Amino acid sequence: MLRPFQRVLRITLPILFVVPVVWIAGCTTPPARPQAEPLPDNEVVQTTPGATPRQKMIEIALTEWDRWGRQVVRVGRDDTYCVTGGGFPDQPQGRWLTQDDPTPVPSDEEAGTDRPPLPKPQATTAVAQSPIPCLRYPDGTGGEATARGCVLAKRYWAIVGKTPTCQQLTTGGWAWSAVFISWIMRKAGLQNDQFLTGATHAEYVTDARDHLLRHPAFVLERTPAVPRPGDLICTARGADRFMTDPAEIRSGMTPMHCDLVVEVDPVRHEVKSIGGNVQQSASMSITELNDANQVDPYTNSVMQWMVILRNQLP
Image (cartoon, rainbow, N blue to C red):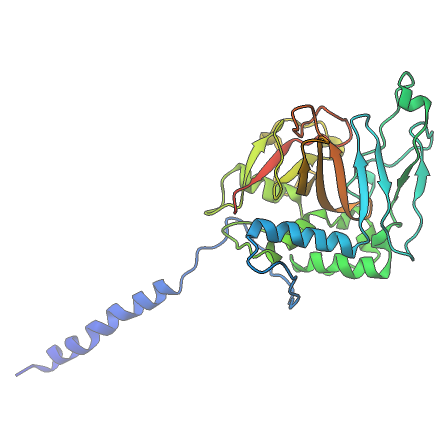
């Protein structure tokens, strides 16, 4: 016959073992760095059925480029950097500049756009002798200064839980190129162990550099390197634009810009990439590559691509 205390043991021991098991099963591994809570978002971006994550990124970027009016920026070996086409009917007009335009242009640190300063022409070159008109969009102009542009850009900031005003979106403190990339990655289905969102490019660049993620979608590779569709090409900006060592990048602090590569044309020696907050819009940049079809920091002094985040996904 069981004594009272024996009955208690038989009843309670299984319970003591069950409770820890349930608690452990409910644990989740926190992200490698804190993630802002995104705002509620029911938008589903349509992609081709059966598309791979890499294909989804590219399709989503192209869809956003189309929504912004298909603006194109051409970056040549001769340091030209010119906007062509695109835009909204009601957007404020940009400025037509030439390579010998004496009017000073704000640097990255003073502007709300992720674009380099206009290079000074070399008077000895044939290009400088024949001025090439280049349309540029200073702060307060371009697609982001329209009602439609404001609505589009606010969607990207929502991915990190922010709600800037339309006026703030045209200022440097709310440059939206990093949240544009973060938004694309989440809409393509990437999870926290593959890609972490951020309000600065330097955050996810250093994530890749420092191997912080369990299943990283991107790994860092120094340039010169041949870009591939789905890769991110990145450069430092402002006072750090001549930075060459990725070890110097500081998460959340180094000003950077990254584009998503959507096409590479080895015959024309060009790479097509899409980035946010480029000339106050989501723009496609068509950049001339070097003779080996690589992006590098040397071929032009306008976009000195320092690293590639190599896409590891199918």
